[in-house]
Picture 1: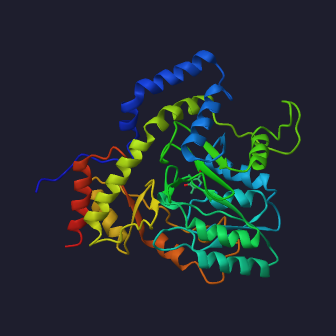
Picture 2 (picture 1 turned 90 degrees about the horizontal axis):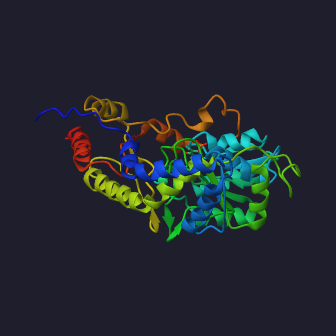
Picture 3 (picture 1 turned 45 degrees about the horizontal axis):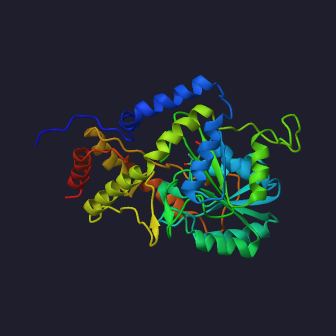
Amino acid sequence: MSKYSAPQKFIDLASQQDLIRTQIDESIKNVLNHGHYIMGPEVKTFEKDLTDYTGAKYCITCANGTDALSLVLMAWGTGSGDAVYVPSFTYVASAEAPAQLGATPFFVDVCPLTFNLDVDSFKQSIIDSKEMNLKPKAVIPVDLFGQISNIKEIVNIAKEENIKVLCDAAQSFGATFEGKKAGYFGDATTTSFFPAKPLGCYGDGGAVFTNDKGLFDVVSSIRLHGKGSEKYDNVRVGMNSRLDTIQAAILIEKLKIFDNELRLRNKIAQKYSKSLNKSYKTPTVMQGHVSSWAQYTLIDHDRDKIMAALNSENIPSIVYYPKPLHAQDGYSSFPKVSTGLLNSSMLSNSVFSIPMYPYLKNKDQDHIISTLLNLKV
Ligand SMILES: *Cc1c(COP(=O)(O)O)cnc(C)c1O
């Protein structure tokens, strides 16, 4: 067999750009012409597009997905003495936002099938945190790799305890549960438009979604330095977190092709799963869910050997995430659930993600699949 040598990409943003380059150039040119670089008309248009798309009543765009979490937590008055329940197996931003506000991120374990917050571990965390005299304040279910969390059960538990639900949909924009899109669930949802996320811009960007008019008003104010009724009226301590007009203009164009991209991602994921599931632990999509496939992630205790073999075939693979948050130096002093974080640790030791983007070519995917299968014969 001849050696396949063309290096593959992990995420190929250039092929998407080729497809809509004319529209993107035009939209950037419009912004340069009107000159409203901050909070220009495209920002409002894109926020309207986002509410139409997600079904959420209100949307506030902001500077990035981490700020989006902070904006909501600030609006809820989160601070010292408050427990904010966060999965340990996630990107650091989910825990960073509560920690920055002086609240206590409380580490909860995840489900090994979905990679998302485990409901029993969440229940135990509430009990544990009360014993530590922390006030149960909010939970941040993270929709890791593109699948919406076990949101019904989480909301039920949270309601009983008067805990706010802040869905971190940085990786699941476009995903659905029972036909409803990410952005619709919880007391609020946040997302990120970092270039490599399912809907990415050409820089940083983020958004908050909610159905709560009161929250919408406060987050809108905090985003603009705690603005009151006029520009130089400051009614609360806020922050500076706006989405650039140019990024909004780019995102308007990208959203137009996004549903087609989601279809392509799902087709690619289905082919991976069908071809690999006899030899590998492939991702589980739960009943009623459609993932946005931010990542396609396998679990294997021989990960290092597999990744080296992929690399020798010029196929990139990446570990998201090699260290659970409770084991990170910056976060190891925060409390964790008494029943342990075994799944978070196990996943950090065994997951790896393979190329996933809408424009992954058939022949490249076939090469990835055959390389992986050859390792298991
Ligand atoms: C990317 C990401 C964020 C942060 O988004 P930024 O736009 O990079 O600030 C938050 N949570 C999760 C789960 C993410 O993957």
